[in-house]
Each structure stands twice: as C-alpha cells, then as structure tokens.
Amino acid sequence: MMGYVTLSGGLLWAAQLLALLVMTVAGNYCTGKNPVIDPPALVVKFGSPATATCRTEYNADLIGWEATMGGTNKENAQQLVWNVSSITDWSLKGGITCFVSTDEQCTTHLPVTIYKIPENVDLVIHNAGPLVEEHTYWLECEVQSVAPVNNLTVIWFRGDSKLEQSDFTQFNIVGDRDQNVTVRANLSITASREDNRASYSCAAQLDLNTPEPIPNNRSNSILLEVLYEPTIVSPSEDVSLTEGDRLELNCTADANPSPTYEWRRDNKTLENISSSSSTLLIESVEMDSAGVYECIVSNTQGKVSVKMTVAVWRNYLTWIAILVAIAILVLLAVFIGIYCTYHKKNKTGAYILAKFKGGNSQNEQVAHTNGNTA
Image 1 (tube, one colour):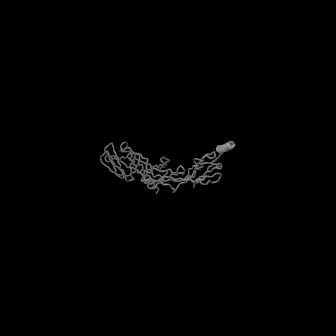
Image 2 (cartoon, rainbow, N blue to C red; image 1 turned 135 degrees about the vertical axis):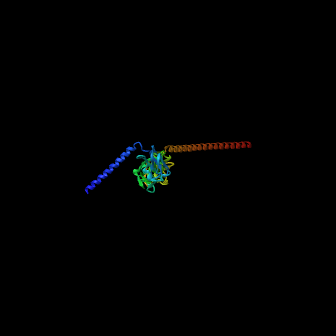
Image 3 (cartoon, one colour; image 1 turned 120 degrees about the horizontal axis):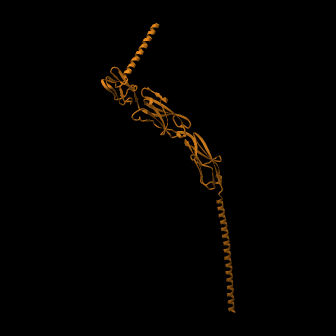
C-alpha cells in the first residue's frame, strides 16, 4: 500500500513538471509573436456596443476571439474584429482573449470593464420631523443599480459645498458584486443652528478611464429644519435719559421655533407689551420709568434673558421755563394792577375838578341875576 502511494505521488509530480515544461516551451515560442489588441483595454457602458481588433504580424493558420458574447475565428488571416451590438452579459467583465495558432497557440488578454450609470440616487434622513440642535442624525444615500462598485464614490454636499466622500469600503452593498448592485452610504451629522434651512444632497461618481467623463448622478435635496434655543443677537446697552425723552430697548433673538418675549422692570412684568415684540418703546419717560429692565426670551428649546439699566434725570430746563413763565405772568399781573389803579385815580380827579368848576359858574350866574334886580 505504501509503495502504491509513493508511485502515485511520483506520477503526479511528473505530470506537473511536464505541464510546466510545455508552458515554458510555449511561452518561449510566443515571445514576440503574441497578437496585438486595439484598444489594449475596453471600458464600455452596459447596453452599449463594443468593438476591438486583434492583429498579428504574420498570416496565422487560425485567429479567433474567445468570449461569452461575439466569439468568432477565422483561418489564414492576420486580423479579426470582435464586435458586439449591445453589451448585456456581465460575464464579459472578466475580459476576453484573442488567440492565434500556427505551430503553437499564442494569446493576448483584453481586460473589459462594464459600467452602469445608476438608475436613481436617493437621499433620506433617519428621523422624521425637525432635528434638535446638538443631536446626532444619519443621512443615507442610496445608489440603485450601479456598477462597478469598486469604482464608485459617493460625494456629500451641503448646498453646493462638498463635505466629504465615501468609497466602496464604507458601503452597504445589496446584490451580486459581479453585476450591478444597490449601494447605501451613510453620513453622520450633528445638528446645529447653521443647518437650519440648509440643504443636503449626495452624488454618485464613477471613476473610470473613459474618453469623456461620466456625469455625476445627483440625488434629491433635503431641506433641514433644526430646533434651537434663543440667542440674543442685538441687546441694547444701559442708557441714561432725561424726563420726556423717548426710550427704545431691543433684545432681538435668533431662535427656532420663533420665540416669545417678556419685559420686566425691577422684577415686575410690564403690562400692555406684545409677547412677540423684541422692542420696548416708551414715547416719553418719567421719573418712575427708571430701573433695571429685563428681557426674557423663550421657546420650546430653552430660555435666555438680558438686563439693561435705565436712568432718568429730571428735566430742570422745563422747570426753569415753567418758573420763568410764572414770573412773567406775576409781573404782568402786577403791571396790569398798577396800571388799572393809576388810571382809576386819574379819572376820579378829573371828575371832581369838573364838578367844582360847574358849581362856581352857577354861583356867578345867581349873583349876576341878583344885581340886575337891585
């Protein structure tokens, strides 16, 4: 039994040695005699026509193409064209071979790459509804019916700006890798307020040595909505006013959803102030308008506040003007009183004088009358 095993092993070794010897002899024979293929490599779109030409420098007894589609041969020829009207056999991606036979058979291999532009590129986000600031979410780009997957790159966009890209080592692949497959790539994002109303998309790019670049297939765009707490962007500073001045305080905030505003003075809520108003307006301040004003901004995501001190000074110019007006009125009243008193005295003296003159005239008339009588 042992002898039989030894003999069998020896025969196997001899067969392998003979095969190697034949290959070596054939290889040496074909040196410089292998057919030449034009083009030396073929990149073709699935469903498109393809052609290649095999040539030899001498008239071969037989020249032919070994291929799962379009295989052919011809006797006593120096060249032979392989031509297929539509590439639909994925097994061609292994390549095809041109052979020539005279005394020995010599071959040349033609690499064939079959590509397929994606039927559809779709972007989805895992989590329905608005996003929340500082939470992590996953975007998924699905590239349907594409090949070859090893030459595929998924590019991620925010607006028109490239973020990053994913290659086949990061893909989740569904289907036969030797044919067209569906690819899913994922991108992790941490939502921020800058992402609110920002659009995200992805694109499938095939990187192949083609005469013309293969156009990217862009996905649909997803417009994000991000909820975030208020941030006051333009608060008013402390202010000092005079009675009667106009007071305007502002605490505009950036927030989503839109915030509500509450105004307080010295920890007391001010009435008749709109809850949607970021501006507090008092047309004419009084002394009791002074104090510490607080603007409280809130929404479903949080609350923030800012304080502003308002000082109000008495308007002494107004008081001076009032006092001057009063003084003028008093002086005017005194003047009128003096004038009226003086005028009255003058009129009284004139009346007495007139009366006195009238009495003397009557006496003289009586005396004159009496004299005539005598």
